[in-house]
Length: 246
Image 1 (tube, rainbow, N blue to C red):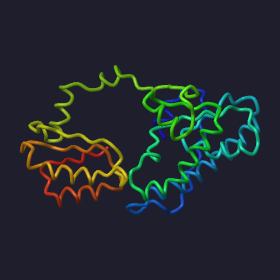
Image 2 (image 1 turned 180 degrees about the vertical axis):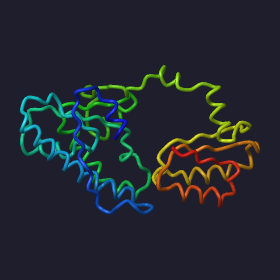
Image 3 (image 1 turned 90 degrees about the vertical axis):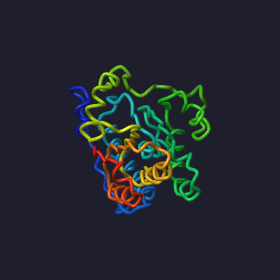
Image 4 (image 1 turned 30 degrees about the vertical axis):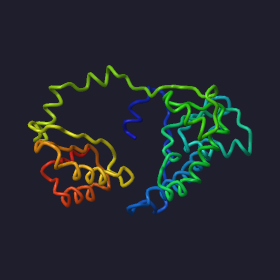
């Protein structure tokens, strides 16, 4: 939230819609249950707040821009009452459509239907990469010619300037890994659905074939960290693994 507020230019008003969550998703294996319940509830609350603003300030809103299912509440409202302000949807990876786990695919069915509703009732659908065009066409039934490609705002040169070989060596030395080789790096929220414990299992299987100096660094934090630490200990990989935190 702090990063978002800092990234907007002066004069931009930000109104945060607090999430009133149902007590779901706090146990292992319930992340999907949390997403398919709390996410739509929040999207509906956000739509009520936004609709009130649109009604009080007609003509002052150029566009409503929603990311994925975040636009579900607004899409439902447009189905009941026509809206003058255009609704633009940005899709992302569409992981909900590509799970190979049968139970997970079944659980995500309402989520997928919600995203399809947003796409069908949006005035424009934005994809962030040309590689996603066929996925959006197949899963959301939006023709390639109707999609607008706007790449994520990542400046490769700026990213490269943030790191170099000497800086990498400094970071490894700070972690006590200056002599480690090869080094495997994982970055992400340490949540159950990220399956970092599966990464531990994979490393344990290939460890006998790796040089003794190998190391794995996990950058990130989250509620699954104790389970990852336990998996590392059970696999006997304490001497090769570093949980660097966030």
